[in-house]
Length: 248
Image (cartoon, rainbow, N blue to C red; front, side):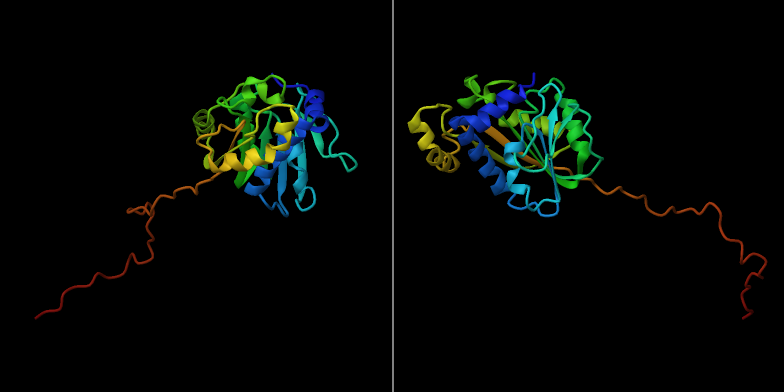
């Protein structure tokens, strides 16, 4: 079940913990995709907090928000790029997306397979998608005070298997949100330190979210070889005399 857009907006833009979470995840996205010049970048679910770095150079930025969640205008003070859409019927032509970010979309969907099929449809050949979901082993999945405490949490193996079953090719695995989901001042002030430490010892610290980058690979069709037998041979040389051996 999708979260309400007002709750998501209030968390990410009106709480200190939400701003800390937004920065931690967005920094990882920018490290993975530092540049999207002249590309079409789309976010689904509530991914708009992660799209701001691409507003300046991308050819087009679109924030898709599913109907059960609701929509809000974004970005503030600029031309609106957010769109209310059906969960599995996006107003985007097939193969038009270069970069796709899905956050608070897959784990809250009642039709995850159909949603992934729609993600596959809109991506162009070689396009990249980044799926960000709650880590089943992380602390953020155990607190319903944040959006990451709702929906179905995943393990990395579960998420990877589901994406592969829908035709995606896995490129990279990442994690983020190593600081605990606490409003206490100490944890908020040391959040960046925990992020740096978590990247170094990911096997020891469980991040709050899992991030998998996948691509859409279209293999060229295999053409059959030339047939050995010609069905309709040319008859241009018919009627010519057949050569005979010369007498010895």
